Image (cartoon, rainbow, N blue to C red; front, side, top):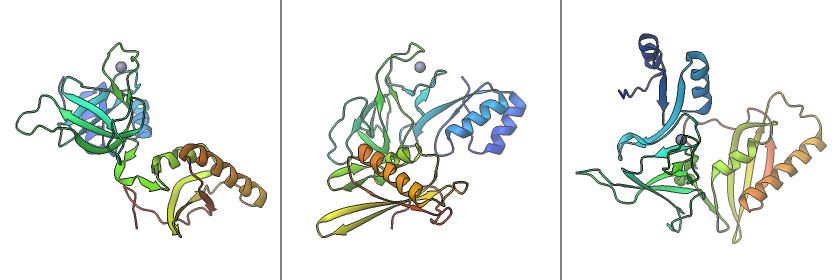
Length: 243
Ligand SMILES: [Zn+2]
């Protein structure tokens, strides 16, 4: 199958206009679910997700099939493991952790148990397409972003997952870690959406409580939740910023 690696949306559009490509596969930071969905609707294409990194091969370590139930790993070329980023212990399939890859066919520059720093989980249940290779979920974050709070590993993506459950919240938040004596305290400031009715104090109190409860279940950790007015948190482009 001919393969073209293109980075810009303008060039994608030109190619699509000229060749009417039926299947596109996307990877990297620009490959959000919503962009793919929109391109599928507008262009009538099949837009799948692909994972790769330049150190390994570029695109092609794994990719979705038409069923989009996770990315099939090309296991004849890559051995995938998931480890706990702190203890480096190998985790069972289904558990979230850092993806470690060993290249099986790469010459000259083989990589053995290469830590990608990407967080995902492996799926071994069969896929509807019939392929039997293990699959991996879309990358949910970077192990660099992991925090260790009171001995518990906390991934910002877990916080985002909880936030996604509440319609009242905008996707902007700040994690504040403080040390009080020997104890780490975790505070999460979360912005409210502009179109929410913020007049009722009782309502906001209850909302805070509910988020706190969900975070506790997800993280196994008590966090302080502070809801802040819309557009009050600083915005950063791209990856998370630590300071
Ligand atoms: Zn499949």
